[in-house]
Image 1 (cartoon, helix red, strand yellow):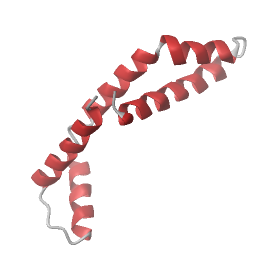
Image 2 (image 1 turned 120 degrees about the vertical axis):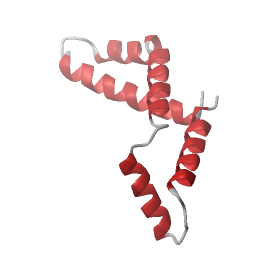
Image 3 (image 1 turned 180 degrees about the vertical axis):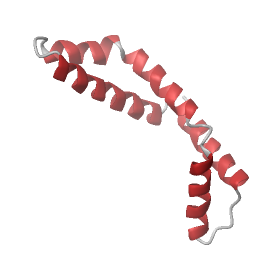
Length: 96
């Protein structure tokens, strides 16, 4: 599993832990943490991988923002080139 997927999975897990603890005051927070950290580990990794995969296709607004940002650095980049770079970054993040 890549470092990015691990980071995304931890962020999702930590957010869920906070959410469940806030909504289940009668449940021991350690029980919730243990379930999220052990029992659901593979689920968070799968969710992170799915979220990263969904990001492979940026919206038109994202492409325009990226092209504008690159051009601000005196780089002449096209939307196609930016998309190739974007996909290369996502692919790298998904490598195991």
